[in-house]
Amino acid sequence: MTQIHDQTLPEGTQIGVYEIKGVAKVSAFDITYRAWNHHLKERVKIREYFPHDFAKRAMDGVGVEPKSLYQADKENYDYGLKAFLDQAEVLTQIEHPNIAVTENILSLNGTAYLIMGAQEGMPLAKLLEAQVSLAEAELKFILVSVLSALQQIHEHKIVHGGIQPAAILIGKDGEPLLINFAAARLAIAARTSRFTEELAVGYAPAEQYEPGNESGPATDFYALGAVLYVGMTHHPPVAAQTRKTALSQGESDPMSDLSRSPDIVYSAELLQAVEWMLQPEYQDRPQSAGEILALLKSDHASETKTAAAKQMTAETLTRSRPVANNMLLMGIMIGIVVLVTVGLWFDENPAELLDDGPGTVATEPLFQRNPGKVADTSAIKEEDSSVASGTIESNQESGPDKVSETVRAMSYGTENQPVTSTPSPQELAVVEAERTAVVDAPLSQSAEQDSAIKPIDAGLIKKHLTAAEKAMKAERFTTPARDNAYKYYQMVLAMEPNNTEALEGLQKMVDRYIQFIEKSKAEGKLDTAKLYLQRAESILPDDPKLQKIRAEQANAQ
Image 1 (spheres, one colour):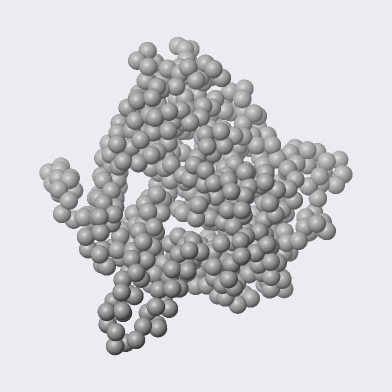
Image 2: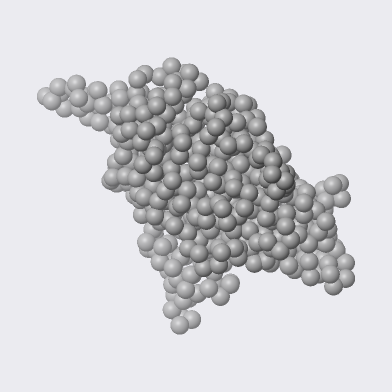
């Protein structure tokens, strides 16, 4: 692969407002760089379309072009570029807390550049390598979170195409994050001799090895089921072809029935969901995320809730540092306690996080299986609404089926004050001390009351700023209504009108929207540009740059 490295862009190369700072990873189909956004003053990752088999660096040292004058090379290059752009275009339109942020897509220099947020966390693969036993609540939280993300990308008529432990990042807030979308890369690989090398053995279902088959939602569900299988058994999943061959010869399935294994101690509905997702035949698997979530919420769960909750609590406390009997704090820490114990947090590692690794296949068009079938989203929307309310129950009902509410909610979470980020034990201790100070202060001592109230205001400001920062990274600027950066910055400014961080945050959002506006105008998407302008004006209506854009639109009309 030395030849590919010889064709990487040197440090200091400018791609628009982005400056290349170094090479993060080189693959057969693209090159990923560490970079700096001079406009917004933040780190980013840039993925450059560069299929080594039929591309080369242009004479100017920056551009990319077909490797030869042969028509086949040009056709393959153009086909791959279109697949790269089509997938990137969809990803830039998606806002979801469990999907890695895709900030922008640039078509320059004969190639394309995918601009990604610099995510921090640890791949699930690293956690599973540590052989740490994952409690049911943790597995369910990962499952429900990823299903919610898949539901949204499937609605956009694409598949992930490469789900495996390395493609799920556990952020520092405990949230699973889906990264390394592989459908476009595998569509390109299908035109080379590298195709089978790109499939994740054990995670890629059988249909992806069979010519003529297209990927669909059930393709991603199989891979996700294999991820949970590893989390439950600590055994690698068996190759899909091996399973099908054994079954066709009348032999038992090498991936035996999980529910019959004496070493597997998970609830019946979770085991059933995993076994359903792992069915060898596409049509025998669930066809939508809603079907899986409906199973997880079934009445059958009622018999195992209490036992699973007790087991989860015991295992979590065993692996974590001593914590007071605070069920709320315990629930919040469940999603990240194992990660803290293992001590493997790091910024994105090129060898692991940015390695797309083997995946699954999608050929153009990227999504055709079961055309016209609409995913059942009712269960997911129900889950989202429960999270949005921030409701946390401290009784025995707060078992595995309540994990998304518990782990994703802040200790302050209420209907009027949505979920934000996970507080540390130290923060909770400070809040408790402040609450006690306010309650115990004599009403006649106004000065002491003021001094007790001020720290609470400071704590709330910090809390809202943290939530705003998280929403900014996910590009939830003004939507959704329950969880967006503008809302949190407004809360801060209501308490401290001159807060510098909040004011700068509003300007950053407007600047980002201006980028979106210019991109939409360049692509001829005038209605989209108008929408972005309306959102930007709702933040800073008097911004001179926005007024100029509004005037230009009026003159054009």
